[in-house]
Length: 188
Image 1 (cartoon, rainbow, N blue to C red):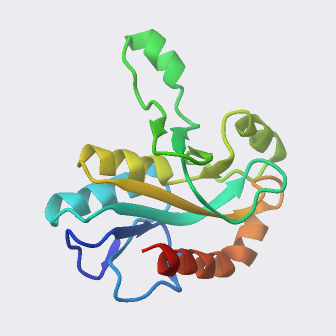
Image 2 (tube, rainbow, N blue to C red):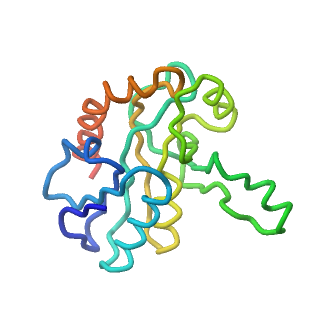
């Protein structure tokens, strides 16, 4: 976990997994780097929100794989689900809703899980439920909501989440970071 800048109630906290994704952000902005995956993201956001004044919002910026052909660009997520948690089975087993999808507004569905999707079969299976896939969005959104802080998820498509996605992500991450920094300049 790495926190840069000062968190204040009149500014959003920008949350990203990796320094590579934050490379072109204004250094004066409050930025939290969580590390990859749901546990790293949830624990970093929770630890930060527990010990600082609440920010105006939490904005999770990051790269995402496209689950459908032709998807590109920067997207604000409308809802997010955990693709690696069997919420239906757990509800039948316990009678409780655990890890249900989170509604955030209008926009595409993001599937979050602790697996980098770089396989055509995995991508096809997820494409029946979502438009984009990442590894931190659900954890950031869930944690911010538990602290009562407004949250937005902004994802830049870096790859097509199938065979070759790891190579494509490595090749595109710097350009994705530039586009995310442009989004911040234009929208905040």
